[in-house]
Image (cartoon, rainbow, N blue to C red; front, side, top):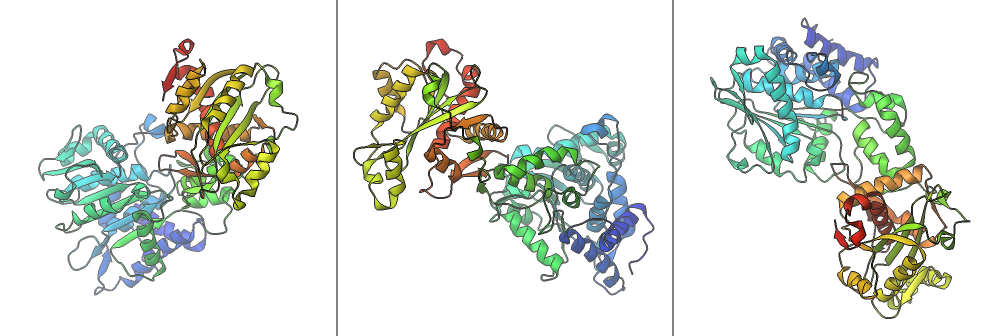
Length: 568
């Protein structure tokens, strides 16, 4: 039986743990284990000779100070509301700051790991924790940092803390705090709070009392974590406070730390200095059920609402590339970086058996050219925007390989496509670009080709040869970068979902679409990739290039009438 707490936040934390235990609060296995650990520790560390004790007054003091700060974003800031802990936040803060070592009265927990989906106020809470640590933690020369992989990410927590401190004059006056452009300082104790990142020029000279580490899943290596950890060696009660959502780099430091926490919660590893909690769903839960959304989001109906998730859930149901983003962002599920792009059959539903490129003579279109030399397939794609009575976009492709590749025994599928006329085979060991140039010129004579988009890699000579053949249209150098491909891929997804695109059943493009994997980064950029070199996606890349120019061509090439060569 846990002892009865007499203070409000401590009582709220205790009640939260007890409600999780009996199922009154829906929770995943890791939350159940984390709260059970707190209840269990209250019992096993009750004896006077135990190594730790729970200091209710200390826990309550931290919560009380943090709740004096105002909200600085959203509707609560508009109405000048102060921070008000939810039960789960009381549990976290009470646990971290309430548990002490009997030997020296210092904090028990030195590392904190909080993994929770976005929009659950983890950064707001962390900003408040930073303001407490710099001014109220009885630490001479406290040095608190908000740290992340990039300076922009690190500044999120710090900038919010600056705004909170500026709005709370009582805090500044009571603790002698000065809020400057790049630091929050307490002159009396020579303490400071600032933002740093992996780009920081003097990481090795740090003497930190606390590090607030944001979005650990985005750290490409453990270098920053290790530097911060070793920078606390001379402090009596240092604190590594890490907050993050799930990610996809399971080889990174974040997943390693997460694994350690899971072992601690399971009891397979003993680490009394490590506190953590993971808010997510359990194996077997339906990610599209609203009950799963509530389980993963502790600020349910406070800062995270079902209506804000429904549209993304609907998209994720039918688009695998959107599914991983949905799972990590809203349900805190770790995923792989690369996933299949489309559900089976999604592309096939766009088939229009009556679609014929010959019927589009004179229509405007955009061409995308993805060139290759030997092993990869070169692709030329024509994308026709809706025109006249035709309400859908239309796509057609031409493809090229050298005969040496096509004649190999293992490439029988290439030979079949050659026989059907879908694949152009050029003599020798490398693709002869003259065949592609001839097709561009033929399409330019039959259609209103507004731009030809080419990847400048290997394409300089291609453009030169087109000019020699008296082609006067716009040739646009378009790098296949994330800045280009991510928006185009998302736009193409929307067109497919809304059935605004049609194709004629082109078997090569069908095959390439099925080969596309989508890899995303921590900034939610998408990039098309492939599982192996044998699974070609060149036609899809050419289509994305054409789509980019169709959407941005006029704005990106203002001197359109000059019809020159542009680069992006």
